Amino acid sequence: MNNPNKISINGNFFSFVQGETILSVAKKNCIEIPTLCYLKNTTPSGSCNICVVEIEGSADLVTACTTLAENNMEIHTESVKVIESRKSTLTALLSSGNHNCSICGTSSSGWTDFQLKVHKEDKTSQLCPVWGDCRLQDLAYRYQVTGNPDIKGFDKVYPLEDVNPFIVRDFSRCIMCGRCVKACREIQVNNAINFSDNKSIKKIITPEDNNLKNSDCVFCGECIQACPVGALVEKDVRYSTRPWETKKVKTTCSYCGVGCQIYLHVKDNQVVKVTGVEGNPPNYGSLCVKGRFGFNFIQSQDRLTTPLIKENGTFKEASWEEAFELVANKLKEIQKNHGSDSIGVLTSARVSNEENYVAHKFCRAVLKTNNIDHCARL
Image 1 (cartoon, helix red, strand yellow):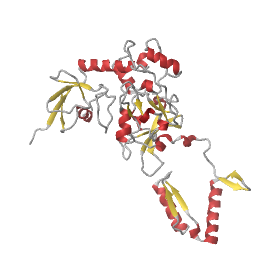
Image 2: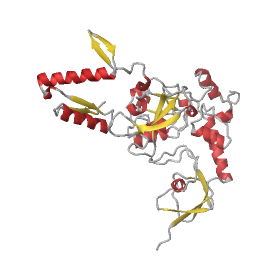
Image 3: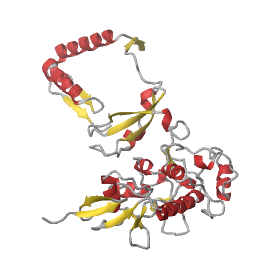
């Protein structure tokens, strides 16, 4: 029997199969290697340099997400050299834009000229819209790193883009990790955004550098869920809630029959945000524009909560018993005067399979007609 491939991570040996990266071996064995640009099920780029590790006998650090595991490798994920490299990278990222993470304090005394300029133009910039739910902030706290005013950041301040109804793009908080690009191009395959070919333009752009509203974007929001910082945020959620103020309720999206698994983020008994449940079939975290953004009807003041019956051209509130009795009598009357096939029933993708089955049985067994259809194209 051939000896299995073995790799040593922090002094512990683990087996691996050919083609696995150091990061995948570590993840499989519950060893955390921090990442920013890595996105599951997409092509790793190693561009953020946060996942660097040290290989015994090698002079240079390597990115764990792009380096294949080799037999008898000895890996160190938190050596002095690795930690210093991550701190240096984080310092550069925190200095590259408007990253006023909690470890930097709420005072603007240590901000760069770039940050001060953005702060003056955006009155809400003293607050981060994803404070408490940001991977960069987590790493800044973990390694106790702040921005360095002496490090030159991005020269140009790109204006905030909020002209579309769903997504706010804050280029001052973008770290150019590319996760949104991978999510758009490799997971959803919409190809709506990419890195600019012009090296002087330090931002993610649409073709012709239009805003999302005038691009091929379908507003699925995959980029928002992939963004590790506050560069992409749901418009309705921005500055309205913090992650610790909500509780997540797992449920099934009701918009069609696919059965996408979603989390309802609930605050004060109201749904304030929807995200996909990552790792669960059938959608594995992905959602369409309706599933991610179409939840405001839940707490709409225009929703009907009581049956209405029209009398003399005016609607009046009625009990459910009155409404059922009226509908039953009308159906009997139509059936008697015009026959069963004069009646048709439409069911909905917004209800369960069981409820649609009951409607089907009611239509055929009670109304005595085959005129039943279903619309899943909401």
